[in-house]
Structures are given as C-alpha cells and as structure tokens.
Image (cartoon, rainbow, N blue to C red; front, side, top):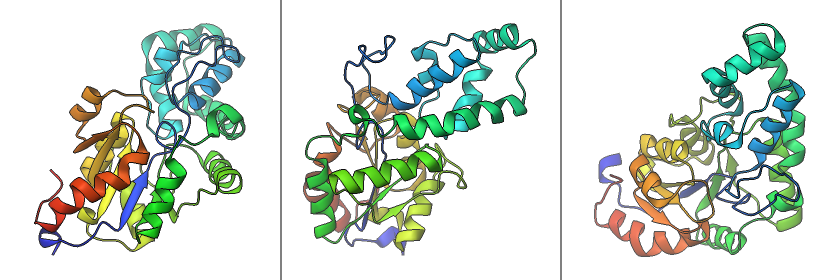
Length: 268
C-alpha cells in the first residue's frame, strides 16, 4: 500500500529552533560569546550551566551535538576529551551519570525560561501564515524537537498565546527515542493518525533532524537560511528538498512534492 500511495500530503512536521524561531542574529549585547548563528537557546543555557561548575566551554564545542535530546547532547559534550578534563580538574573526579542528572536538572528550568525570551521565541516572518495555510488545506501541522518537556510546554504555550501558532500534534521528546532515529516522526504520525510516511513532510534546519526525516521515509526538507546548517550540509544529511525558510513549505508541497507524489514518486 505504502509503495503505491498517490494521495495528498496529510502532515507537515516542523522542528522548533532554527525552523520556527530562534534564528541567526547578533545578541552579543546580551551574551558576549554569541557566534551570530541560529539555535542559540540551548547553547546559552549550557554555557551558563558549565560556568556554575567552574568550566569554560566554548559555543562551537557546545554546538557540535546539536539536534539531539538535550540530555544526550549534554553527555556528548562531556565526552569530548577537553571538556572531560575540565570537569575532572574543577570537580576532582571524572563525570558520572549522577553528575549528568544533576547538571540536566539545572538545565531544565533555565532552558524553559530562555527559550521563550523575546529575541528567541519570535517566529520567522511568514511562518504563522504558512501554518495557517497548511491547516486550511487540510494538512495537519506537527512539531518535534530535542527539548525537554518544560521547554516544549513553554514554547508551545507562548507561540499559541502571543502569535496564534498552534500545532495539531507534538512529539514526546522525553519518552520517544530522538534524532537521528525516525521515532519522533512516527510519534507525530501516530498521534495524527497519518500513514504512510510518503504522506508526511519533515522539515528541519539541522543535520540530525534531516537524518531523522530521511530515516522515517518522509519527504524531508532542509531549511537553510533561518537555521544552523547550510545547503551543502543539509543536502549531504539526506534532505530531498532545500528551502530558505519553513514559510516556503506550502509552495514546495504544491509545486514539487504533491505533483511527484501524485505521479507515483516516492521520497528518495
């Protein structure tokens, strides 16, 4: 059945940071080490948290595992040799799972506050209209992210209350295995009652999210102007299409994806 699907796109799944909001901008007046790139929220909070442990971890290092669930992201940062040696020097022992739990417990409430700060939560131009258009066309709009529950709740609530953006379904990043596995996409599909993956578009600005979409069998779109990674990087990660911003997705579906789907094309 899935191989022969020629029906409409039924679900679009968006990442949050770098796809919906939190784009590239200069916030050095607030955060002196700001690198000007997109997806600043978790980098800001990780830097603050490490400083509380007497550590100095640069933004480039913090960004390297970007896209994963933030507890896994933290473990990856701590696993870098120069970070692990800093931890041991400042704390007197090598980091353990208990240390990760303690640090992540510190990360959670601060991330929920920083993510909805005025500069980071503001949606990209045209994004609200694009979501409205998709929903008016009968396409459900979902969201998945690597953020913990408190941050997701804060972001979704603020986007709804202040900008009128409401997602039809959201993935459970706390309990579903995350990127680059396909399971957050499948979680949204299950909640939206949408099948097969060829009826789904997954859009992301980061390699792990693009790999998630490609691994799921959905049409996968790399967003390159508002996010953290460029065209070449997103293409190499497996994006089927590249667009400057998520606001371009309705037109992409109409002009490229739906015609291919209707004529028997599959995501590849």
